[in-house]
Image (cartoon, rainbow, N blue to C red; front, side, top):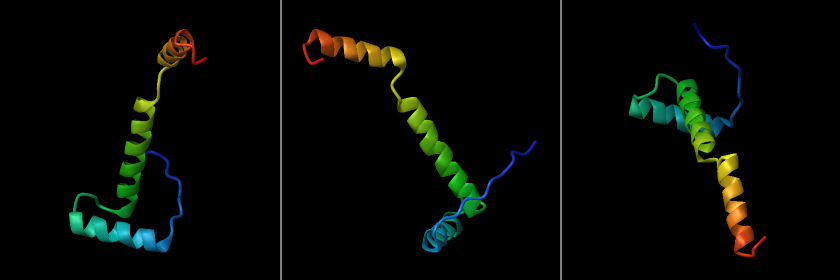
Amino acid sequence: MTEEKAQVSIPRDLYEKAKNYVEAQGTFKSVDELVEFLLRQLLEEQETSAMSREDEEAVKDRLRRLGYL
């Protein structure tokens, strides 16, 4: 089952750099594959590095007890 795709535009010079990277590295089949990989990595990192609600409340509580809030 394939995922539905959407089109994204990037500056031509950035596309050319990505294309050269893909050709030189041989790791990705296309610029689209490279961009998809990088976006997934970036968004995944952001999701995992985001502080949970409980952690945020614990930090606020500690700051209150220290007199900062």
